[in-house]
Image 1 (cartoon, rainbow, N blue to C red):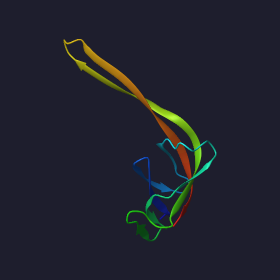
Image 2 (spheres, rainbow, N blue to C red):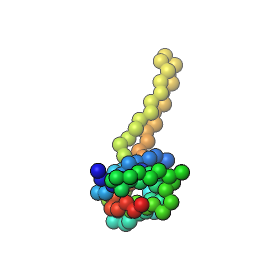
Image 3 (cartoon, one colour):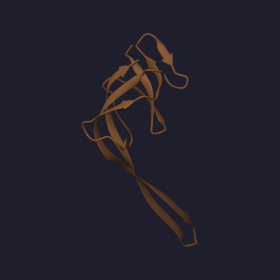
Image 4 (cartoon, one colour):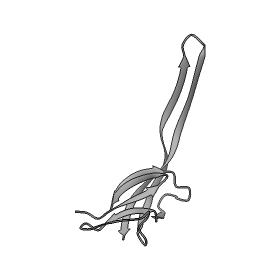
Length: 106
């Protein structure tokens, strides 16, 4: 079984393995090609044993490379009350960062 870790970023939790590519909420300090480190590691496994943090695993680190910063698909919120002439439409595009996991250190 592969080594994996559970990280927390942007208020969400992700299960990651080496060479995993995933989209997380926008990381402000990250530009394409830069390396970022995550230190909010909730659990880490080396393939045979699992270490669970309380609340985080001390000394564990996950490093990742930023692939790109982009904006997600538009989400439209539309409200309407029939026969009242009331309509509200607003759209939102979330800023996202695509990262590739390089290493998991327990």
